[in-house]
Image 1 (cartoon, rainbow, N blue to C red):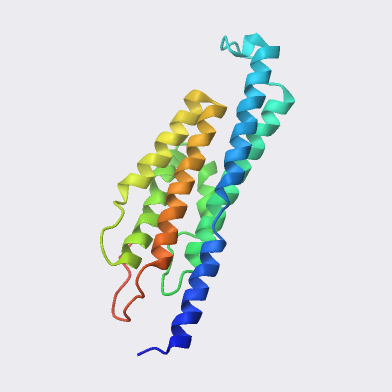
Image 2: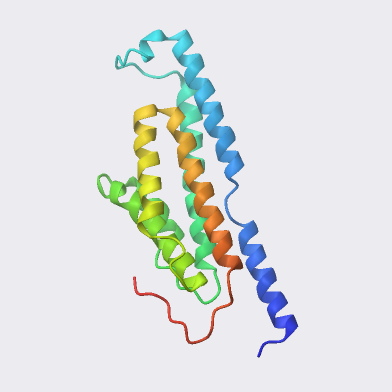
Length: 187
């Protein structure tokens, strides 16, 4: 049996990990700024709306670029938190989680795969099927597809998915303490 002090330190550790999760509100602000930049660019350069192949204005490119970089920073931070979760051996390193986004064609599979690993953590920590592994992967994949179709407006959906995953990780971190004999699911 653990002492109250042992439980408190574990609770504090889990709260500290929860605080290290990505700040989704920053992503929302960046997405909104990118959307505003897109509206201004279309107003100033109507040929952008027609689908003609033109180079976007620098301010639009930079806004979208910074937002996508922040998305990758958030993916990295999420995997850092999972890598430090007590008693959990996360199968995806933070660097791999980001790096696989840059591999053509495989990145489409990866957008589906890595959120499923988050679901495996949540289910392991809760000791039950709390989050179906296909669900978050499908949400992230569809948000990415919407980003390709909608442009900057779709970036907001990526951060909605991130908020969804953050909430489940918080629930998992705050979930029941793991018995020593519970084994980690195979990957």
